[in-house]
Length: 106
Ligand SMILES: [Zn+2]
Image (cartoon, rainbow, N blue to C red; front, side, top):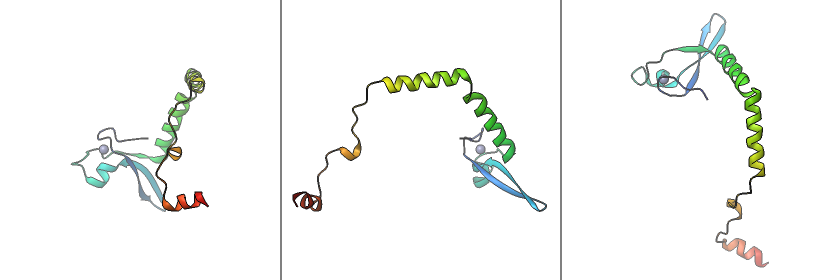
């Protein structure tokens, strides 16, 4: 879901000791694993700060009444649309194995 703003790489969780406790932060995986030549982004963000910001943004955006109304209208249109004629892979005809042929004769 979240990626580095400079290189687009995934984020990883890094931990660091703070006395008897450990602190966890998100960091760019390209910088951390492949070095600053690949990505110069050495910024880290504490896990709880980033998680709170993401959850707040999702809550604000996804629980917006206008967005919910539009999502409900789209879902209703999909339900009302005619069913697709795509066949499920499991129901496609395939050559039957000798074992299955033998079972069907029994
Ligand atoms: Zn990066």
